[in-house]
Length: 576
Image (cartoon, rainbow, N blue to C red; front, side, top):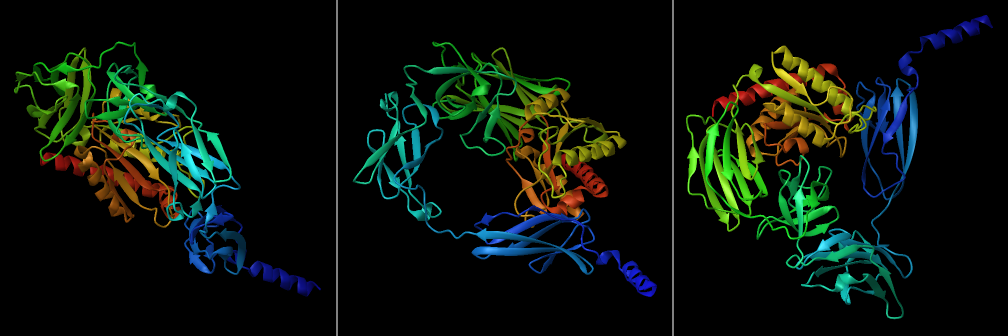
């Protein structure tokens, strides 16, 4: 008996730890009940010395224990086996997924109106010429009308992803339109019976010629949008403006006012950026007076006299290198432009164009590459301050670093549970330490795990007034196999050389190239006051990229590449 006991103990002791089952197998993403797509992926965590097999195919496991796997699903029921294996031991998870086919689906059960949507927004102030769109889900094959028996058309299922009973129509608002003085209804009829449903929308008609609504910009960061489009970054911005500018409203959709900038141009501004003003206020307009351009210690300053504070937009161009400022509501009465060449360091020449009857364009030609400009009003005088090019040595610069997210805003999460806000801050501090070791002045927008809005960051940066800004984020989204790599972002084309120089160096790390993205509508790419770049280091949503982001030695290498990219950018500036 003792002999058998000793033999059994010998067998147990002789087993390798790698022959034991994986102790950890957790599916983090992909374990869902129902899908439509054939390609399907999983993300999960296991022991970092285990192997992962999905439907018999092996996928990499990274040092963090995270993995990603992809498989194909047939229509109907699917049973996918996910196996974590260590030697001869294994842990198995079975995931059951039903893949739906794209068959015809009826939008509404029975005879009914299920849903009504109004575009561009259910709550609007409208004026003559505005277009209102309506879309409803109701019983198929019916007659549908609204307003004064205006017909809605049923869309073919080829245009609705196989859903029957989707109706749409458009309506152009007329002069002195009476349709919006009473409740709005949608009516459907199938020839035997009919029903109607009230439109849950507040639409008010405004005659902009007889009763114009005037607004005044307020706050430190009012801005104008091109249109009503939006995404996770907000609507596409024309330009930041300043407080105290009178604007004529020409409608409203949701929380955005439509404003008339000139006879042919309109824009949209958030209601939190304006306040209504007393009736009787005139729409501002002005003749331009004399100009002057004079340099001081940090800026070349252009001063233009106007009769009112007027809205404006600004952008810059390359080849030739110049700043453009359009003043809406202004007409030229300028007889001379006084320049003091001995004081000007950045401005090469000043000129203007009257590009429309009520749009006055200021053109500032630059002697050097664009290092930033800001626009303010001094009374009714428009002041454009063009920043002098600094000494083109790294240790002469003041560099700001922004660690994205923070506090309750954690950003994206990795497969292991890592949080973007923590990776961003750690990376920012590594970059700060390396730059300061070279004698470079560095400012962080946040030094700890604190909540900080985009507006607060921009206003802080205005006070800091850096020579350039590097904003640090992690990317996320899409398939863990295609959503990988590093990328840089700029909005203003004059700052593109900064983003391209940094990206070129980052790609030496043997990471995927996710591109250099321009015209990017990110808040910290919007300032014109200093060159700025957003660096999306890697995809935290990719287990492979996440493993690199959690590796301190890799973050150090990436920080070194950014610094080399900054030096490359300065070397490029020296050539111009």
